[in-house]
Image (tube, rainbow, N blue to C red; front, side):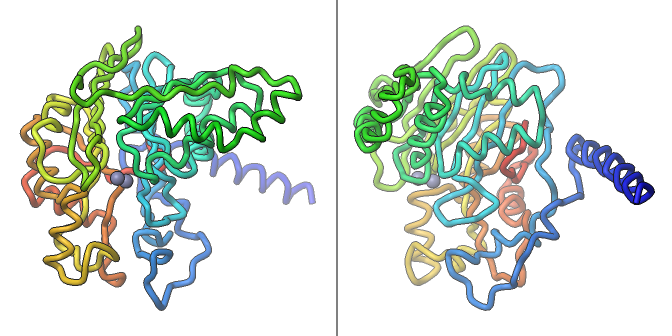
Length: 362
Ligand SMILES: [Zn+2]
Ligand SMILES: [Zn+2]
């Protein structure tokens, strides 16, 4: 029995070391997901798109951030409205001087924070500490980018953490935040009657005036600029440009047609966090019309085609795209995890593209 225990402990140690190496490797081949339970679907529905199959997750989350920087991008959620159990809703943290600035709050953000911390350890744990979660910048008011806001406000409050939230976004974010607090007023009142610190339940939405786009927030760690963009019929949507002492990180938000403001937001950025939809396989998209032509017309009103994203990144002289919110639709038997990435390369982008996963750090 003792011998078995020793062998077990030794193999744990070896596995632990290997796991450490795998996460720090530049591009790991290892994937802890390949053995997840999976039944190959006979029918493709919103639940069973091949992009969500664990057998196609070919690596573990990685940390590719430079060692000598005080600014890191923590990828919390790479999902979109269609449900993928391996992708939380859109959410990111720019960590500057160990302080987090969140961008978008999709479904599962609170759990996604825990996931990133459990993968990367104490430094990220300290940087994303719940008491530091005070600033959120929302690109637009679509539900997939905002449905995590109640969770971001109320879960730290449940821990009686006195961290008020300042939430910046397009016009209407103020009312959205007010309505969230009103919707959960019974829960909030119950905790307050038990002596909870009311500061933890404070949240204020700050409408960004689209006509006065530019610097919307600034402190010792970061300057945040907003640039108005177009995304389907939404009138107020933003790209955000974060400038710190040593890096520039731009978030396009959800895309649409080419827009010079996105080029301005991304000019010479170290990282461009962007979305795109396959053009080659758009016929497999489960929305946007019946024919390929209808789908192209409708879907590219809302999202970047590979060609538009390549053009924006090239004009902005961006060297690295962190791809997220991927709509990599395809015939299930021909799925390639790099399919969308490859289309952006074919469209003329010569820099580096990472098809990001929840828990990645750049
Ligand atoms: Zn979206
Ligand atoms: Zn959207």
